[in-house]
Length: 78
Image (tube, rainbow, N blue to C red; front, top):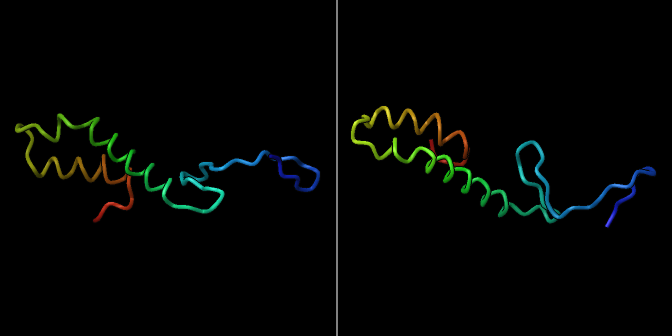
């Protein structure tokens, strides 16, 4: 389906990413939440060996978490 605005035809889509946020036709936030959880999981599992290592201190792991994982998902607690 196409939308016409001032003689311009624009294709209608059910969802799109705009400024890093998923926007849906019905303004539902579920898609955005799923995407953020998936991004957080990808960031964690990409660094899983570091977080499970006994050679790295808890303090260092917390710094890594705050710089690698938390920025991916801004909804994670402070």
